[in-house]
Image (tube, one colour):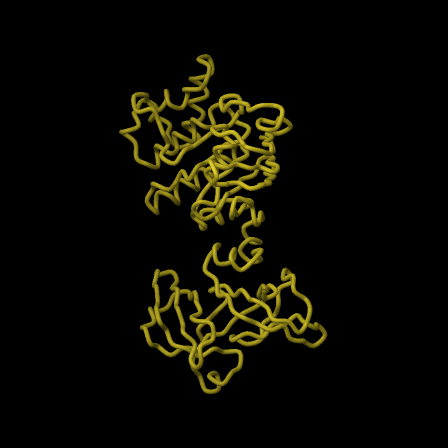
Length: 361
């Protein structure tokens, strides 16, 4: 396992810039997810790391070896010690599972190494089958085994679960994570699936306009995103206006919103009081409370009506439009269990802090 370091990476196709000075430092043995909207440069970055494209500027190093950079030329893909798992597996249809896995290995290592890998990916006994005789999940396991066969310094995973159904996707990605961790391989997963990135990765790098806007552990990225746009991109988000207010013994550490006064997270950069701020409240920080006597007059409860309820069994996502004058649109509430709420149901919504805030522009 080796560290991967990307410094000042630029890449354009014609007059269209894709990567515009990207920096990334992936620790050895870690699992990093690359997340971003379509066109943000995820696939281009992966192709540069693999050696399928040449950078216009900047450098890529695997361990202490520069594989792309000024003055040293470009190390070809087959000499980078990189394993690559494409979206569809790209197995050779005319070769058996054993032959696919051992394709890049010297003949003297092939039998032992392929047997080890097929055991690791749960396909022992299937070595004589052909790709068309396997399920989609089994094909992706073969593709992973083939990528790991050369004992790569880094393995690159290019949306390898995109073509699988929901149940199979969850099973295969759990297996992939287990195998990568057992092998101690430095892994980079490119995905557009936020749940996938949050559940699998040690750290997540979010691309926007050809640069990484935040590189952090999943919990930090979700609870303390760098800006409101990133908050909206990573999960559902309620973005509301607020005003910093004084609190006893803690000036400026409370924020007044349409959902009442809430504690301000220590991760928020704004400290001056008073100040107009933009506040992030995640849907799971909101709860629907009973309309008991006195609750409707509670300043920390927001009265409104249900406009939509998406029911998933284990939870539901409820959209509530506040009563009274317009106040920034609907709020999104994630509830656990309970029956589906009909549209038009009057409800009261209460928030739990702390919340993240940014200075309003």
